[in-house]
Length: 167
Image (cartoon, rainbow, N blue to C red; front, side, top):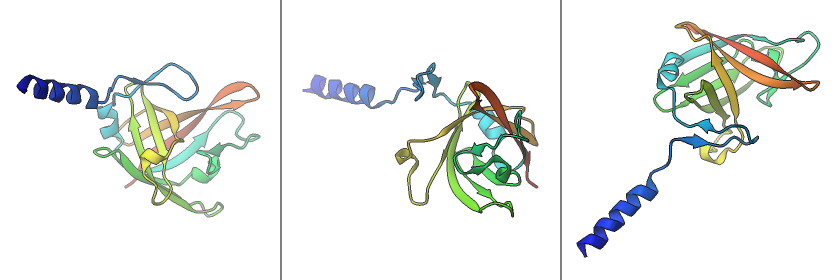
């Protein structure tokens, strides 16, 4: 009887543990690691202002960032990243654009990619299937960049979001 109980406990422990090695991407690309880059997460915790959005051809091409608004509407937006629970918020406040605010869930994997979900009110992150992968770059005490890839005429271009620490 003790052996059966011991085997059951071991089986439950083994099968209940979630693998933290890899997850596949939705586009069939190489698997992404689900291990987190805790040091970078801690480095960007706090309040930030998105100060600039740049990409080749920005004078001719409009980019709809995060499926929410024109990329220029994000200039001046405020972002809060909480590293101990991977939650936060973002708010658009440009006077020439529609105001928007939302809670977010985020993490940075050990490949330097920020995994971001923008949540609707009352919806839990596990119910949100769509999200964004952005490369994290240029992390300093007072600034960092998020870099997204867009397809323009069959060519991949980088959209760079520049953040500065809020006072």
